[in-house]
Length: 422
Ligand code: EPZ
Image (cartoon, rainbow, N blue to C red; front, side, top):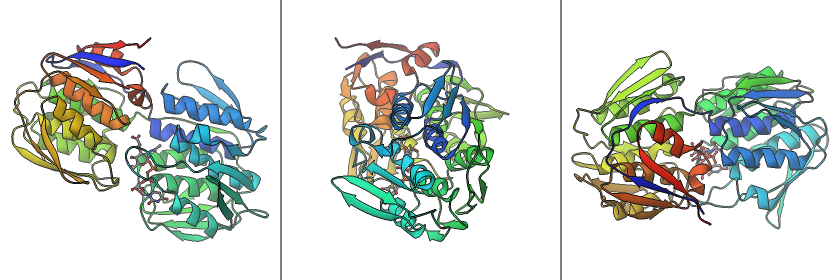
């Protein structure tokens, strides 16, 4: 298993172009199963989760053409297998997003339950409850969901009990081929829901209200060829901004979308950094500022994303003063705290969802272990600040969602190398 070796203490300086959004790409790849033609997707990031989703589509019988610089063309007219197996779904939970499209297109599908993961139990009850409202018969046995519908799914009024990004996406996709109109209340408003709707509209879907908590879908007999360009990964942008802030550096992020990061950018200003926005360029400077500890409460969009909680917590570890970080979305998303303490941070858990941090003047290099995707990026931030050398193990977690992170950090002046285990 690879690890990252980082010598901390160098301010990050320079320009970064973020990769395509992993969390926009994954549902869009699943949506290709709804089309009877070719779907052309650009700016697809080369990260492990995307590779696994493409593997799943290939297993189902999709024809996939990749051209190496982020362009993927997918034709699912020959899809013949309607089972998403456990050994793929357990590796990449978003595989569960093929449930809605396969059910709507073929009337029958078996998808392994994704199971839990490091950050929580990750139930899918809302997905199943909503699909039943659309007329699906759903059975659970031996860890698999078997979903059927006699003819077509039937449009219906749905209200989610909790805001769920994946649930909103799964049901929105299924509704595009249902007979009649589906209204989804308490829907997720994340930008990745809007991006999926845009791609579905390019395929002929009739969707409105995406980006609000009430989405309306008017079902069609079939969807045709389409395509889209995936936006910049807003979580990668936030991660690198946090790294630049923690190291008192100065970074320009180009080809990004500041509009989907308003709350995040406001939070960096509360830490005392200077943020300038010019069109699609975000510039953060922390070279002459004392970082001020800032309380963080994660929330659904447009609040502070849970996927940036670990990064902001790492920033608080090296900011002046005390702070609290409250995780409201997942039940076990503080696995990084104990690893940051190994780097010298003064942080602890007041409860499973509340961390308290007292900023310290310096961190010291140590060997730490990545536990999940975003936790591992907070360890990178800690290591970039720590005096001396740190080694971050199990960085396959990082590779799931960050494209060649060590190369991007090296371009920004970081002293980092990937160490491949033999
Ligand atoms: C998506 O996961 C993202 N993943 C996650 O990013 C992100 O953290 C999460 O949304 C929240 O923004 C992808 O887009 C591939 P949810 P998802 O359903 O859809 C509960 C990363 O690091 N819930 O919005 O699985 C659930 O337990 C990943 O890139 C139910 O109770 O998240 C959680 O507490 C991590 N029943 C809350 O809702 C359900 O049926 C939000 O989960 C579904 C969800």
